[in-house]
Length: 133
Length: 228
Image (cartoon, rainbow over all chains, first blue to last red; front, top):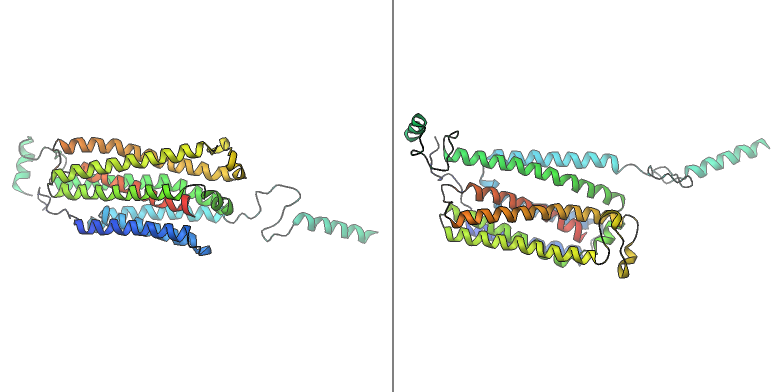
């Protein structure tokens, strides 16, 4: 049976807090350097997001003390993260694969492979008209 | 069940349990755990609130990557970086304040809360200069987006979309910082009055959790808006 004392609360030591803070500052410097001064092409975006994710994990684990906390709170956070992932990924299933759909210009309607359907239709019409003559 | 608790339940008096312990909880620990879980549930709703804006950012970025990449360079990474460090420092001091509350060190608690409060104010001051700097070049959200002077070259399609998202996301984040300042003023006054001990510091703990979340949101906003 739990007592009315708070002996059960984990006290995160100053050493851990200072180490985490120093790591967070170092990661911030790293993300600025890799984004502003070193161009690594297509990897720029994933790298910046990975560093941000790592920083967020440090904050959640040590500053928010989930590591020492009731696992139920970690579960709550996990469910939240899963919901956000579903939200993001399923939205992109739609929006990232629409091709040229929003383009309503009659001259440049093309399919997802970039073929100009209008032009092909016009050529097909001219071809069949030529065949009749 | 301990004897003291049984007595408190029989008498329903206020003498036999700590002043902060409400009658519908058996122990202080149970009350603390319940409060903290409630706070985590609230934080999830906050994450979901911001996720809508992050999804909007992602969708529009996928549609117009070159525009987003181009105009994001208009935001000064030095000011954004400074604000990142300021928020990280405030997250650190609020964690320290909880550390001192758990050790019954009232002076350490109050000092760290005051530093946190100052960092929150510095963040908003820097944000104010960033916003007014952008406004002076005609960079407003939505249809008001009309960059002029040197910035006229940025009057390109979809650039306004980026800045609408920028103003909405940093604006709602800034509002959370403002709310945090209000709560920290209240917590600091209570800490000075000596309301918090190692036996009861729930408000400090919950405010800390809220503040860390505000920090995490910024950790993602900084690279997405300023860097890449």
